[in-house]
Image (cartoon, rainbow, N blue to C red):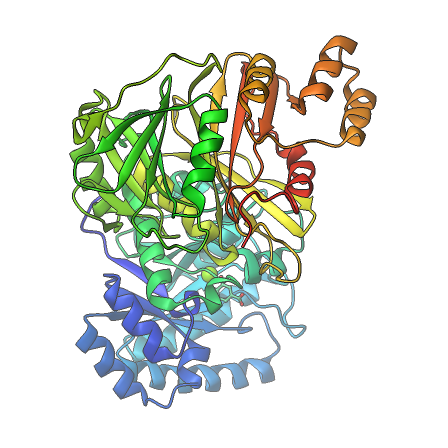
Length: 591
Ligand SMILES: O=C(O)c1ccc(O)c(O)c1
Ligand SMILES: [Mg+2]
């Protein structure tokens, strides 16, 4: 894809007044906007003033939209519709906009007659042409009769007017079971506009799906890359423009949302698999304070970690077991009982290159080779040769306590509910991680959605969780939990040893094991061991998963130990409600 292609965004994607939306679009580097009519109607600015503001911001108005319910109607309705169109053409002249979007009709006045639709759209295009305006006809997926792109194209072809073309919207095409490959048969000069939106796969009414659940490309389940490939193969040379109706984005701070939007288009234009390979988790950094540090250190000791170095310039200590590393940062000694994951450090062959890529994807730099994730966590890029250890003075490490941890399996982060989709896109763009399937489960304090992101080699995994709706505040004493999961080759042996070492492990209720027995009929000895050691279990078609947890340290962080047997690729989401309930009232360092 060409890097100099114009990028646009529909004002409907962003929150605020028209003024807020235009400022946010410009600040994020967009070249143009689709002006959504409602935004203009509600604006105190005249069309001339909007035109001037856009020009000042370096934005063009690439599309005026939408014009609805025009075609295939009786003569008296047509006359009214043409009058309506003339008045809009005048507004467009004042705006300096030269393309109008006409959605396929949903009106009860419309009849099922493509010939009539073509004839009336021809008439509309002829009027538009007199004003130097082009008409882009878009098949809404819920259009009364015209609801597929191929049908809209047949009508446009039959209408045969140079000022009439199609608007292709990825949502309307990909939400329907019509093969998008025939887009390639449309001549590029007849594709007047391209609107892009992703969406999760949902089984629901398509209008509701479109109006509430669209996402920026890369956040959902659609093959946007393939879709854009088809459209560009026609020779289409107009902008890539986002049109995302989304309940959350509608109320999100528009400047941050516009940056996410831009990131999605940058990622879409990038060739696949260009992220630099990652070797694994280098370390995870936790912020601790005077209250929590002793408790976290005691927990790490119980898990078999040993202190192995102090940072030469910062109040930071490194704890290690095998290739599993935790860095405790005492930056705020009087934190008030706080523990939080402050940084996820990944190892790779070219940290500077990774940081450069992250910044190209609009991630805010933090220091030299680190960027800030949307939730404020730092992502640090380290060399995989452990050269960064030179920043630490070595501490005498005692004998290995035999708890069996190998390395870090994943880091679990809970995102604020209105930042969840952005977080997945961030890690996708910045680290080249790919989202796994979404899991949803009913946790004690609300529905939780879980979407891990992982690199192709499965060296770096980040498990993103979020409440499905704004998190309730009545009960939970574990807020927005975060965890670090370490890998063991033998979870039962690790659990046994860690109990001897005094690790603050989480007890799992007997009911869980009764149910496990009923569901999976595990060998009795295995079930007895799991029960005795409070180890949870899951399996899928690839393998098995054994895992157990510490209690919560501070008000949100806990540790997990996992054993993956065979190719088990998940995170034991089925067990999450049980652990979440067990964590209730089980904090070690209360506030
Ligand atoms: O939901 C709608 O009405 C609507 C309007 C304009 C569009 O381009 C679209 O895709 C949907
Ligand atoms: Mg559209």
